Length: 224
Image 1 (cartoon, helix red, strand yellow):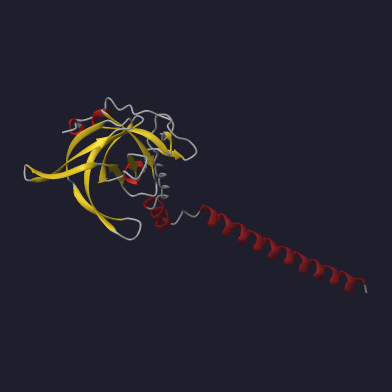
Image 2: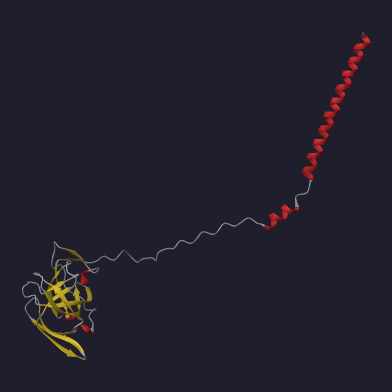
């Protein structure tokens, strides 16, 4: 009985030792594989690829366009009333004019209108009466003729001239059609072709300024 027990113990001991030997062998093999993988040289193809393909640089930000600097604030249009004094012919003729944003073109009261030829072109001679009743003869080249539809449906042919007009310190050479305005109190009507972009109008006021364009007149602004 004692021999049998010793035999079983010896067998069990051998099995345990064998198992431990196998486990140790597996551990040694695994560690050698890890060391082999860690010590193995890098793939040359991969290394060349990384060297040949550097990281792509980020594009530089585009410059932002800046507006040109401005000197001071945005230009303010002068404020005027619905009736103002204006000047023609280098300031020698002062008239009272209605500022009418409903009219396309300016109109001037002219009387004794006579057409004549000068240097192969059509000119017109007429008289203008200023705000105090003085009459001035004026000669100007005809730019064109226009047909204006008046009240009642009738069309009227008018000569169109180009003259310098001074309102306050605003000067502009503008087209003017000649017409008999004897039925109206004001000698002239300023339309949008002069007013647009030059002045701002307050219909609650009038006679706020006097013409002052001394440095703006040209040789073409003479009476003849």
